[in-house]
Structures are given as C-alpha cells and as structure tokens.
Length: 592
Image (cartoon, rainbow, N blue to C red; front, side):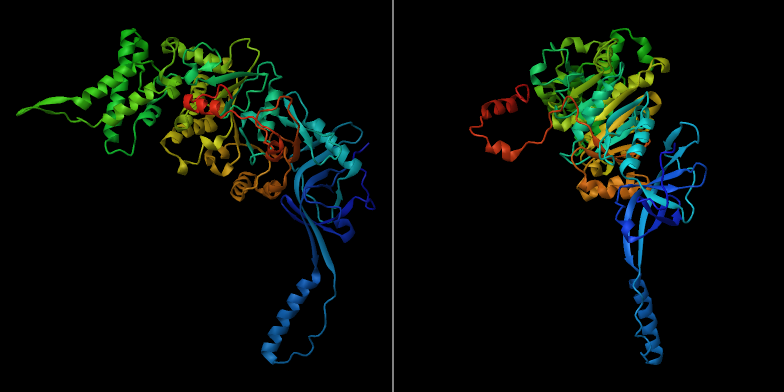
C-alpha cells in the first residue's frame, strides 16, 4: 500500500509546477492553498513512474503578488513615452484588471520511492529526476507527514547511527533524528551557536551516545572545566600549581622537551626585540647541543642518526641556560687585550624570561614535572594515558585546561593534539584505533590566520594539518565555537557536517551561509530564531537537512546559564571572597 494517497481534490493539494531551475522549483498556488505552505515545511512533488516517485522539497519562500502592480508599471511606461512623443494623454484612462499570482518556491532535497507489491519504501538524498511542468504538488501535513517522517527515521537508523533528538517537523516528536556516526567524525564536523544556545548540551549528548560503544575514543579539550560532571568519561587535568608532587594519576604533565623548536622559541623569544634573530639562533644551537649530549651519554646512537631539533628528546634546561649565558658574558682576545664577544649582553632579557618561566609554578606542568617524567619513556606513558589503556572502561577523555595560563594556552592545546596525531601517524595501520578531538571554544586557539599572534599560530598549524590530513590516519575533528567568524577558514572549510544552533551575530550568520552548500544557503535565515537546543543539521551524516530538537543529555555539563534575577531574589546569599582571592594568588581552581 503506497504511503502517499494524494489526489487532485485532496485538501493537501498545493498547486502545479510552473518553473524548474535545477533544484529550485516554483509552484503556482491559489490563495486558499497558499496558506498551507510555511517556510521550512515539506512539499511532495509527483514525478513520473508507476508507482510514482515523489520529489521531497522544503519551502524556502511564499509569495503573494498582485499582477496589477506589474501591469500598471508597464502601462505607465507606455503612457509616458507616448506623451513625450505626441503630447496627447488621452486614451490612457483604462485601469488593468486586478488578478493575483501566488507562488511557492521550494528546494528539492531528496526522492521518496516505493516499489509496487514490495514492502520497500525508502528516501534518498539523491535527486533521481526533476519534476515536469504542471506536476502536482502536495503539502506534507498530519498523517502524511507522520508516515513520511517515520520512514526517514527508520531509513536513518542503522548499526552505525546515533539518535541525537527528533525532527521538529513532526508535531508528535515521534520521528527520531539519527546521525551517521562514521560520516560525522571521519569527515570532520562543526557545532556552532551563540552562548546559551545549547552547545554544551549537544556535545554532552553526542559523548553520551559514543560512551555506549565498547571502544569509542574521543578526547575533549575542555577550557573551562565544563565537562567534569560527565561520570562516564575519564577526567584528566593539566597540572596546576598545587599538583607538582605528581601523585594524582588524573593530573597530566607535559614536559617542555615535548615542544618542537618553533613552540620553544614562541615560549621564550620575543620577536619584537632588536636582537630576536640572534636570540633564536643561539637558543636553537643550545637546545640541539643539550639534546645531543643526552643521546650521546645514554648511547642512543640510532636516535642520533635521525635526530632533528624537533625530536622529542629529554634535555637539560640548565645546560641551555649555561650555554646562552656563556655567549652573553663572553670575552674574546683582541689586539689590545680582552674585548666583548659578538653577542655580549644581547641575551640578558632572554635569560631573565627563561629563568622566570622555569621557576613560575603556573608553568610547573612544563618545567617542574616530577622526576619520573624526565625519563625517555615517559612519552609512551603520556600517550597511553591520553589515548587509552587496553581494556580501559572509560574511553571518553576530558582534558581540563582551565589552570593553564592564557598566554600559552594555544601552544599547550596544540601540543596535546600534535602528540596524539603523531602517534597515530606512526602507528601500523592495522593497529590504529580511530580517535576524535572535540575542540571546545575553538575560537580561542584556532583563530583566522590574519588575526593570529606567534603563540596562536603554532597551535593553528597543528590543527590545520589534522583538518587536512587527519582523516587518512583515523583522526577526526569536531569544532565547537560560539564565534564561527573568528575560527580558521581552513579548518571550517574541511568540515562536511554542521550542527548550527541559534546564531544572532550577523557576521557569524554570514560565515555559516558561506559554509553551507549553495542550494541550502537560505536555511541560514532561520538561525536567529531557533529555540534553545534546536539546531539546523546539514551534511552527509544526516538524511534530511532540517531543524532538529536535540534531546537532553543524562549528565549535564556545568555550563548552565545563571538565572540572575532568581539568584538576586535569594536572601542571605553567602559568598567567599577570601577563598577566591587565595585561589587567584595560588592560580588554582581546586576549591571551586
């Protein structure tokens, strides 16, 4: 039995096709039928065949035009021209007849097909044909809409799908919306929305579904500690000033020798200084010498053969300091006795920066790691901690970066991503486990190239490489941001799936419109009026590109919007300013 039983006298009849332009179709409708069409609603267009195929489209525009306006304009033009030529204005008193042209513009989004006598009904995103002129068009409402949405829901459901919510087109909220998990992560995705639109809930919902898989592997870069409430995730935290004893296994140290040459230079060399070039040159030489000394002492001849300045080899910063200090204070023999060396006094500021950062407890996770982290094999332990032990139950990892100083945050996030990517790159293909990065608040460390400083550029280069090449090595990106207009164009252009919640900023809306396929640009017009938790999902991971209401996650992130008026209405609210000041002094959020 066919799903659609439309007839010409059906109350759902909208009108006939009068114009076809690739995927854009214009329907001529009578006024009483025009009221059945709403922007965002679905329309079924009858195509040839037995049983017929139905081209499913979405309404993008509804137009009610009086033809008299056009006629009057033409008549006025003729009248003015005749008066100019003859000076006679008689014979132009006739008024045009008042008629209306009501049209509905729709966008073809897929094809519904069923075979006669066979229980095989399916919907595909492919446009298998285009409608003929005067093809019948019907609005999908009531039972017809419910039946179609159930077909879409069942078609979307499969072994590798996750249900994220329900289609808002279904008033009964019975038609679940499924995302194809493979396509969502392997081709990169972006979750975009203004603050308070429901981004954190959407992330938590996806993580919740992924956590149900036996060997899922997702790492969340959590900048504000929002996801520490997720009980199914493994909680990791970059060490703060109070964690330098290294006793807590959930605390991560990232020893400075993991940084590559550019990252090290960014940390210590100020490019604005007159002697920056010489500082960088001597610093590089000192680092190379310190690394080679360690490898030679430990007899690692194999490593020496392929050694570069970027090789992650533990080395002594004290040795680097002494080497630089030697050049800064060097005296050489001249014709009349000792004289100042070539670099005398040029590295004083560099030495001060080195010494101050090495001793600063805020950077303790880099420079004051416990002795166990200074062994050559500690890199193996760190990678296993980040990427998962064999048989570990919690495969979702949350890395809390909230205690990392803001001035080096991009470098540290980029370091963690680069380390994992490189391990994946060098791993045997048959032993490689796919891994995905969820980059929360991505605009803070993945900005546009034109707006980057030297710190941000280092992180951006790491992530842009992952965006362009990560898919081949099982590394996926999931970019989350409230300001898409400030996120790297290169990274967003590599995303093939977009989950867009409410966006109120015009610049952000314009960016999203550019990212969407040309045929779906008009969808961006609804972004400012989406409700909280309501999203426009577009991409090859979703069967029907339309609005979806994202379901509430079981474990909610600690990012809920504060109710100011409600809080202000509470009596005798107790605050602890003393503790807050102490936390600020210690640069630790431990008591929060």
